[in-house]
Image (cartoon, rainbow, N blue to C red; front, side, top):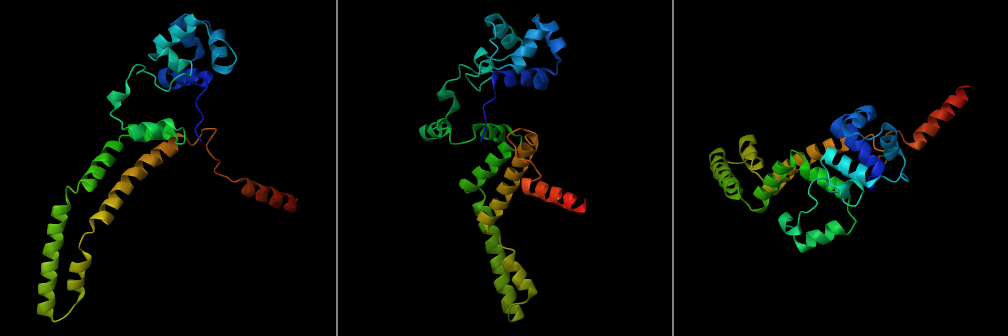
Length: 216
């Protein structure tokens, strides 16, 4: 389950991942003290002064609400729902808290996601069905003629039959490849997260320890 980043985690992520700065460099560029900045990033109970909030929000180019953990939106605090073109059902699902919205956002922002939607639209709206049906019809005509001439089915006539395209199966492979590429990258991005399961299981580690003890 996705755990919402704390205020210290947000501040450290912005400094390290977005700006690539040390605490000393951040202090020099913002005018805030290094010790205060360090406490902001490590102590969840440390109160951040209004001046520091405004300064850091402006420096990082994010909203104050994002720094304070009140929203997950960094740069669009005033975006209305109408601009997102979501249905009531979609809004209810996203607000339910039953889904991992972080993964949804990362999938949506992946470079392959647009291709996934295009491929899905082609399949759902049957855009190439006519072309596939035309190809299948041509293969079927050729198969029947070959059977008549060969007086029965052989390798060639059978290949004309199995060569016909099932549009559902065909697009299932295409969409699967798109989604696999997206999820593989998202999975790799979060392999070192604290909420990610370890590669080595506890049972495997116990087995290794037992074997080592027996050898001794």
